[in-house]
Image 1 (cartoon, rainbow, N blue to C red):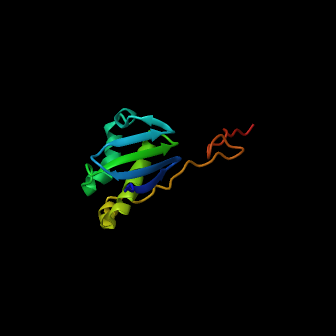
Image 2 (spheres, rainbow, N blue to C red):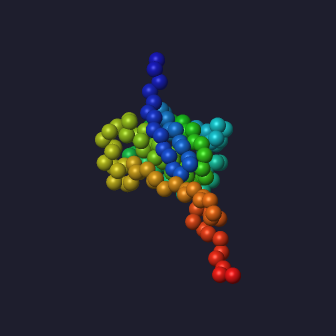
Image 3 (cartoon, one colour):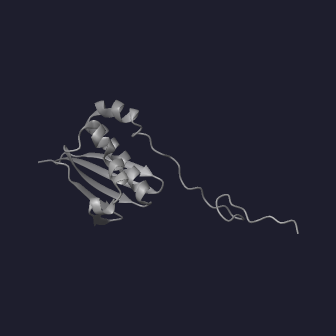
Length: 134
């Protein structure tokens, strides 16, 4: 018997989330930086949980899939948004007709903003040392 699963990758800042949707009843398995973590204990704020589950709520597939997530790098918010993008892309693999719904909600757009690198001679990416005439 082959395992039916749908895969999606999400990225945000330096976070990368690999998301697998498998037919089930809505369980979420989470691995953060190669360590298993309970979903509700790791993402303690409701805003993170809401962000992650938004594509499932919009498409009314919240209780249709068990979700297996591996996420590496970044902070909590970036990880949550990377997972959201991964879930949205995996849902597209499941059903192409969901594209319009997800696209209108802005869930298929990758946020390309990254941290700007520090330049030599400066204190940060743009912050310069204080100037004085004498």
